[in-house]
Length: 157
Image 1 (cartoon, rainbow, N blue to C red):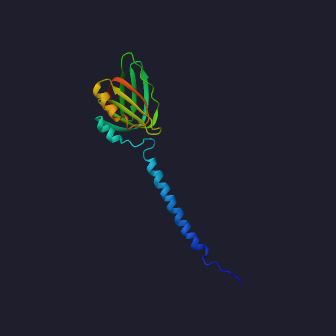
Image 2 (spheres, one colour):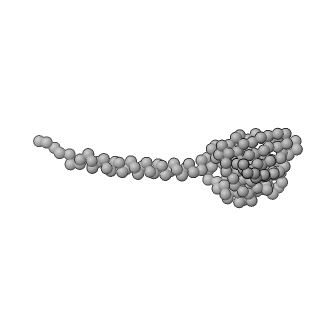
Image 3 (cartoon, one colour):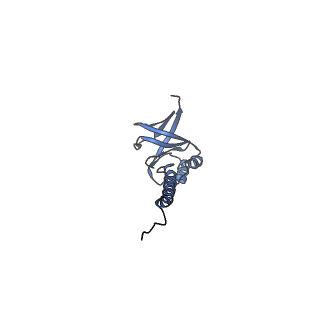
């Protein structure tokens, strides 16, 4: 007696292929949502910029330091951070992808690759209060420096 398989191979292949495609799409969608803001946690940088009355810029950040302060270069923006007398500013790493919030109260730098944040806060009560109010939105603040002030220069090319 010869038994016949009631379900031919093609009938099993189609549901398995469909299931594989659905699982792959689900995993891709979950991964895509995580990749849109790598290392940032759940902070909203636009809301942070609004809270400190600032402007948000993104790009590569390069820095130069001297005994009087630090120069930050971001695209067509140059930011001069003047250090307080008798204080030394911490060194900032080069950031290949960063979000930078500039305001009259200081500068917030967020390395989008590592998720690390750096605060350069003006040394006055209002600036310190504003920056403290948004600090909890950054899970990885590497350093906070109080500065004398900033000068922001926008240039072309």
